[in-house]
Amino acid sequence: MTSILARWTSVAVAFLLVAMLTPAHAQPFPSRPIRLISPYPPGGGNDVLARLIADKLGEGLGQRVIVDNRAGANTIVGTDLAAKSAPDGHTMVLVPNSFVTNVGFYAKLPYDTVRDFAPIALVALSPQMLVVHPSVAAGSVKELIALARAKPGHYSYGSSGSGSVGHLAMALFDMMAGIKMEHIAYKGTAPAVTELLGGQIPLMMSSMLSVLPQVRAGKLRLLAVTTAKRSPAVPDTPTIAEAGVPGYEATLWYGLVGPARIPAPLLERLSGEIEKTLKNPDIIEKLSRQGVEPYYYGPKEFAARVRDEIPKWTKVIKEAGVRIE
Image (cartoon, rainbow, N blue to C red; front, side):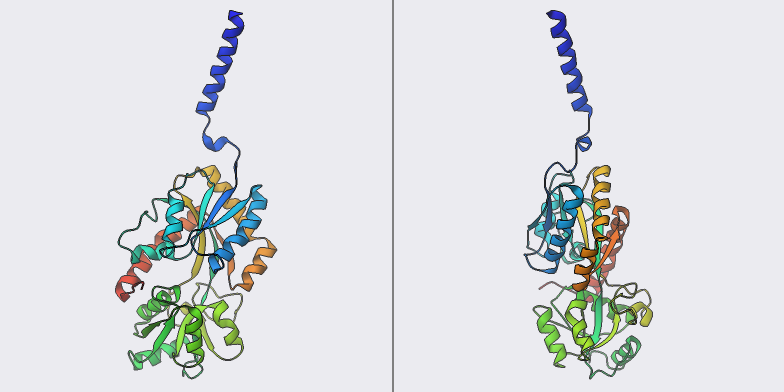
C-alpha cells in the first residue's frame, strides 16, 4: 500500500512540475473568444472595418472575434483599455493614424505608444485626395503651389475638423511645398465637401469615398493622391510626391495592436491569420467599395512605421500649431 501511494505521489509531483514549467502560451490558442476593440462608436469607418475583419478572422482562428466599441477622447479610451489587458493574444484594438498623432496632441497619455503595445499587423490604407473647385486655375499640383506662392494667405482649405487626417495632410503639404494657406475647420466631412462644391472654399484633402463621386461627375478636379504609390482606383492620377513635392506621404491607415509582451508564437499566429483574412476576395471587394485598400505589414514592419511616424507628425503638429478643438 505504501509503495502504491509513493508511486501515485511521484506521478502527481511530476504532473505538477510539468504544469509549472510549461509556459502559458503552450496551451491551445485561442482558448476563448477574442476581443477586438474599436475605439469609435458603432457605424463609422473604423467600426465597419473591424467587423469585416472580425467575421473572417474568427473563421481562421476557430474562435469568435467580438467587436467591442469603446469610444472616447480621440481613440484614447479604447486604446488604453487594450494596453492594460492581459498579453495573452485575446485582446487587440484597431487603431487609425491618431495612434501616432495623439503623441503630438497630448502632453501626457495614459500609455506609452511604443513601449506599451505589440504591433500585430497593418491592415488597410486609404488615400486622401487633393481636390479643387473647378474655378481654381490649377490643373496640377505644381500650378496650385505657384498660385499659393503668388498670393500668400489668399487660398484656404477645408477639413473635417482641427487635427483631422485631412488637416494634418494639408499642413504637411504647406510645410513641404513652402506655402501658406488658411485652414477652415468644419464639423465633419460632409459640410466641408458641401462648401467646396459650392465654391465657398477652393480646395481640400478628403477621403476617396467622400469626393471621388464628385470628381467623376466633373464637380471637382482631382490633382493628386496622398499615398506613396498611385491608387488602383485612379491609376492615372499622380501622387503628390510625383507631382511636385518629393517625399510627401500622408496616408490614412488602420492597424491592429495588442498589449506589450504578447508571446512571439501568439503574435505570429494572429498576424499570419490576419494576412490570410486580407487576401479574402470578399474582404477585398467590400473594402474597395469603402475607398480602402487591404494592405498587410507584419509586426516588425508595422512597428517601424509607428516609430517613424511619431516624430514626423509631432513636428507637423508643433510647427503648424495644430490643436484639437
